[in-house]
Image (cartoon, rainbow, N blue to C red; front, side, top):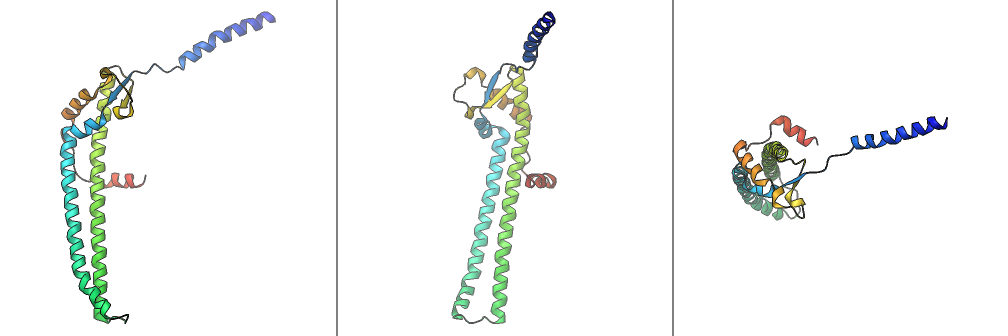
Length: 195
């Protein structure tokens, strides 16, 4: 009986290290990518940024125009309301007030839609670049023997030999020379809003 227990115990000690080794994670081979440099210098990134800045400037200009129109319409209207000294406005003035409020609401809706369109366009640009960048980083990392890639901004120190930024940037420029600077397709906008 003791012999059977001893054999079973020896068998268990032999099996436990083998099971533990099967569960071990391979040693990390780390590479770094300077995502800030890529986002500032990739060809598609720069072109998209220029277009987005232009769209944002157009929206700001439209907001100023609408604000000026509302101020121009609201000033005389406010003077008429003040002249009433608390009295009830007549039907004509009430109609002007309602029209002014509708103008304000319409301007607010237009600007909100413009802002949503701009945000959707930015999200679409980011999605296109991120999708391509992720596949390129994985490919370059695998070819260099890395199994972990970290953004350079998140690393205190990394030797230059583990930096794959130049190769990633070169491939990104070759594989994604431009992106669509348009809002997300309707189906993807709904998915983004549902998150």
